[in-house]
Image (cartoon, rainbow, N blue to C red; front, side, top):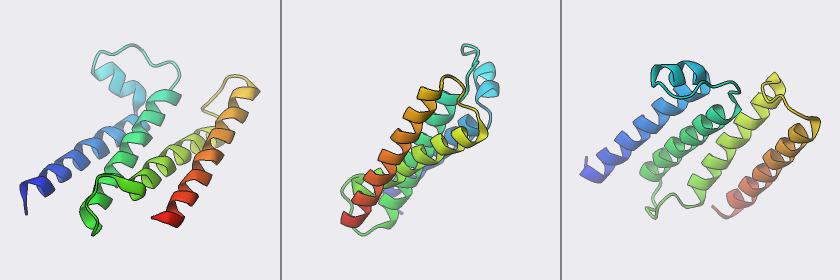
Length: 123
């Protein structure tokens, strides 16, 4: 296994580990690292989902024949991870705030889904 592949696996492991912890335990992680108290878990969880998408993109980079950065496949993974996090938080009622905020997040998730589907057609 080449050094580049090993580095990609290290990147993937770090991003996936931090992403999972941020998605599942954002308040605990903030408390452990002495960060400001997390009153609303929306942004830490969205960031965790983004890190999981980056880890998935790195996995795809290692396993696809074309080796040219994240490429469309990576962007699809990142977009879908963010979409799943947004929809999950909307469904669980973890977003809070005004109705227009929930509508805007739903529209943003829908737009990212459409973008991912268009990218999938070209990937």
